[in-house]
Image (cartoon, rainbow, N blue to C red):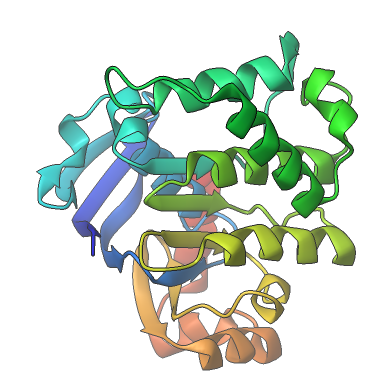
Length: 263
């Protein structure tokens, strides 16, 4: 079992404090859902975990199996098994999907280990079938001209090929129709097990209809204010986030301020 531990994490971007003391522990074999309104700090947390240089950690710690994640470069974090599925995947004209995926898989190989190209192509085609993309996508440029759903499916293919230890899925369900959402869930469920853990960041409960999280957390104004099970998802669906502000006596003007600084 491997563990990703976040303790009292505070972080800022452009001099604005966004995270205000995050505490969270994720173990392999677990699926965690992180929900919260706009401006609560969800994407900031994902960027900090991945090592985005625009985000500055101002306090607290993040450790991966006891190692200081904050001391690792972006590349080292990836090689250690951290994977981030982007909320808005970038287009890369001129770089074919086949070449890109082959290269990122090669980078994960142990020193001296050689890639079995036949096995790689077989796995790639199988994963294209899993997410419902034609094999011709192998020769297309990465995300160029793709629909929103196709871009999210390509993120899933990368995840399934790399088999990360911990995946951070930042609003991977946004803008997807019902069929695409089920496809995303299939990709996550395919990896779920003792060697894989995930943090699913989302606004909505609908992805949880196909992925059953072990834990649900509510992020509000840069801190996790409540954790529980699937019942929290149902509560948010029926009541929205207003009850969170009332339960924790958060002034409405403070709520608006947090959304402003996070935008």
